[in-house]
Image (tube, rainbow, N blue to C red; front, side):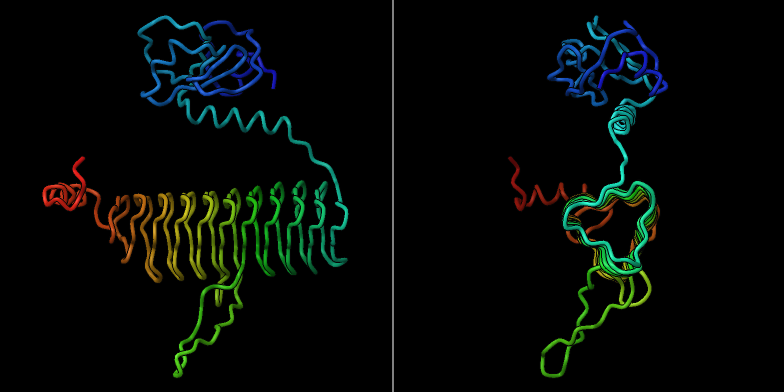
Length: 332
């Protein structure tokens, strides 16, 4: 990366405050900035580093008021956190190249169809009647079953497994070890105490601009589809069960588990280790705190839930005061 501060400002629709000709070669955290690096400041806890950082440039919010002189050139933007994400995306896109490649020992069945400049890494497999869109990159040791559809500009990292019949949209990223379309956990109890497997004949649909984290799993439905709508971001080690539907732009953090046939709304946030029972619904814009269990439907849009079992965040805070008074919570 070699960009002037002026070019960075143009990319971010920002404004340079200082030298527009400084050459930026790398990124750095604001507390460890060095000459030639660019940092960003968005969290008030790090304000002192704005004045002490040795970085050549700092991305800051347009409305931030300086209280001391700074040595770095500033690039003012409406939202520094969003701006650095945009800059990282820009830099990555400049480095990215698209080329047709067929890896050694890769297997591509004759009936499958690949778009322009598809990259297929070593020891990857693409099954019968599957379709892979243009400019998609398939890393080594990826398995794609029969009758799978994958869109354009997707990235499938090593060890991804996509079962037959799955449908993947455009610009989807599947991190290493993600499994899409495995059987759901469905078993019918028998009179002798054993369990009979329930066959899952549905599929998984993942819409555009979704990212699924490493070693996360999305199970196919018994009938119909498990659906991950556009813009959803799923962290590592997340389990999404059969027949679940996740609304647009919802975020699910690490080690969250969602049981079967639950519907999660749009723009929701499920923090780490959240557990959600099956056959319920969660309203749009719901926020669920870490380690919370959701055992009933949430109908009020914009709710915040916390606790085990989860309940309204404000009620939880009042209850927590009583927990501390009772001695059941360590007061240290």
